[in-house]
Image (cartoon, rainbow, N blue to C red; front, side, top):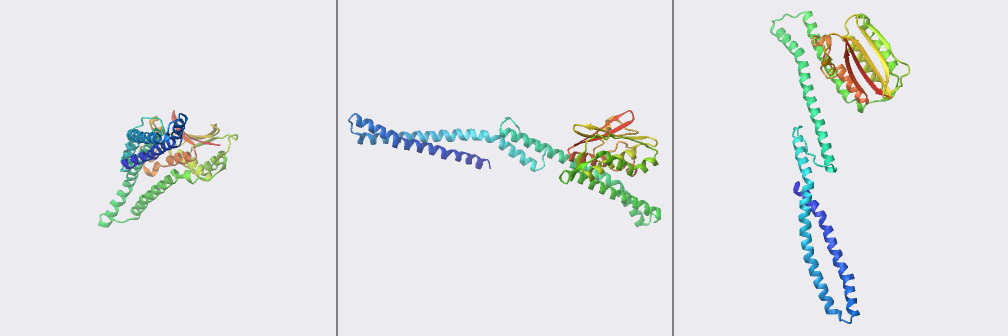
Length: 354
């Protein structure tokens, strides 16, 4: 491939050289030779024999000079073209490594021209591929970890039932049903996460008022808050601008945040929602009291399968996908998410532009 590209570029230069030689040849034949003959006649010198000698000499010199010029041009073009193509050859080798699965390979960028810009974009693409590959591997490990416990439990009891070691009972089948439902919930959460990460392609934007949606979602979970005696306070301003967003996706975002807050807020705790203007849009801040949370955990709560309260089981604490879905959906809208922790209260927020 290297030789083909190099010789193609060299072949592009050859027609230019040939045209220049032809132009010089014809110029001498039709212009310089005529001018030479005119001078001969002016000074009463017979131009016939001398004119032909002049043309033969000039043609000979043109041929020799053309051969020398062509050799020099091909040599210099070969050297310079090879130097220009060297970064492309290197990127070709790097792309081959990336195609074979080595996402750590990077192209060396030594210039700021078009080739250098191409190298920078190529390295950026390789960075994104490496991040995606790392996320894929991490997700596979996390999924395997999440599936191992319920599958091991179901397998153990089914083997016991099959061997007659464990007598069948209503309680036994009820427990197996719960484990299978855990697997179903995990599969549904993964499906929602996949859809959330691809949501940017399928957004149906319309003008929505976030305060109205917040009140609607809070009302859906009011019974859960009352069951734990959690106080709910709304500080929602009526002057915040409407946003262009997918109504169903934003309801899912609000539902995941409120459900997560209700799950992790201790009994007799407090949950608060407030809105404020932010970069020409709206920022919603959800605050709730929490237990056993460290500041270093705050930056990880939007990662898939992460749970800040390690003591909670999957049955009571969930799979740790809810806030990852929130992040994916908000970023699909071009918004931002974040969290902070201060004196026993965690603040989870997201913002959308108007």
